[in-house]
Length: 537
Image (cartoon, rainbow, N blue to C red):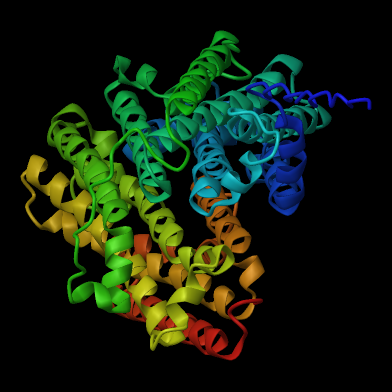
């Protein structure tokens, strides 16, 4: 009798994936998901400088026309605050002055959205956990999101450079504009990626946009006072790159190096934290739910209250800075030219005019906060979080109204915090808060648009809303450069509110009209939401 010896089967364990394994696969997935957004982003931002060259040639055909415009811009506190100084009254100099600050601002917004969408937002929806169960490296999700930002910013930089060269502008200045667009965009992508490691999605957005607002305010204060503060912010770097004049090549390099450092820090933090958790701890909830939590509004409040607090506190600190700056402006800019400009636009003191122009921009930051909140309706639906709520006695209408109420509260809280804080440090009291809250109907217009799209075209809600907000920024940019007629500029609710505050329009009818439009859009969206299938809409 012979015995059979059974050899044990050796288990060959697969090697652990590297930290960046699968990054290119995830990048392909991101490119497919964001192909429409990426195309619109690259084409809009890449072709903007070339379009401004054509518009400037038409609007200011002679050298004297350009000189006159540059001189008027240099005595305007609002133009100095929002655009910085004009370094040369030439075609290239005026185009660079126009697009440097505004282009950097739009680039910042897009890169913040892209970076957080593909990092922290994917974590909270559970998408990244599913991907991480495969052979995906620990840093692959972060690396793929940043590679997407690199691809988008590189496309914008190349297209902007080629467009300016095609218009016959000098090579060095054209390359400089493209480099500024790309490098500043990557800085904010790195900053947003860093904040995504610290907090949940709402708080990460709040931290990112608060930092953007602070950078903008520092650049404004630095250019008005002609101080070193302008070099503490990437918005200031973009303004002072002096494209088509000195062509300071080290400025975009500075932004690129700072952005790379932020990306490295984000990667180090991503390796050391748990998936789904942030380095900023979240407070545990109660053992038993309160009565408020049993209502849709209470649930929405519980979910969004930290984001509302983050937005309000962050921009409240910015308001404190603005208020302290306005205290000294009347003395610093007490010249006949500045006083004449203030009287010409219909405002009071130079400090009041400065504050109104800054709030004009910050109102769009408040809109971004409200949009991020209300678009959570669609995000919950896609992530399967709406279904467990709607299988209870909660109706679609009450569920949606709770989230919409939080979006309104977010916008109002941000605007009120800016005005209240600025009034406290400037000595103006509640008057400045009234100026900021006047933009609430404009914010509600965008919230209403989001609700209408969620109700009838849910897949298009997020890309359309963010695109419209970006287009309004571009429209305001063209309006400040006097390249579009007032009738076109007044398509922007922010421009209508701005003109109403300066007395060019009656304030009450304008604010009532904007509010009614917002309510109508919201009602239209709720009607659509009640009709369609939530699970597959």
